[in-house]
Length: 278
Image (cartoon, rainbow, N blue to C red):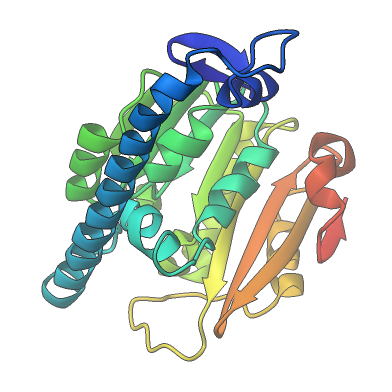
């Protein structure tokens, strides 16, 4: 994997070597390191203080939004990054991004349904795909996404999935959790349209959550087990697989479906599936 280190494109191994003060073919410390160590120490203390401050302000943001803006259906996932993960050790929010990214092909043209704040759009999908069209029913969510999570190959668009898919050429559709807001009939119609749009070599991935301990009046349809979700997807697709994770009474069912054999399309995912419909 390549990244950027002080403006230079490098592999992870190269960045690791630079972090140890080494250059190519040399493991000796830089002769100026003793002089630079106080600067490094100061930067580390400054960044530690900034991380603490960011944790506190994101905790406050989450508390205020949770108390006064309860009807909002989207979430600022930088609260997850800066508070729930760093302070609480909860990294479960990363699962969906990593799962869908593992399913993506580098040349994919992605349609993301119910993108919310655009966090996953920018940091997981756009970094891997050729293009992403991200849609959501909430204009406020997309205003935030455009301001905070824009990227050159991303386009955000207001769209109600119940009215059909946007007119765009796509090879991969991602739909995370918002499937529960549709009735079974609406969902079946939407998945059939997704299948028709992406064709025989396209992929459909995402997840749905099942939280039986919560009262959620806005939920129209739920999947209670992996088998039920896989069976539903196979009404439209030749192949579907599902696996689940569970935390504190919440079950996440991750899925990928396609007419293409999934053992070849997403081998890393197939190896860990609960319902390997390959």
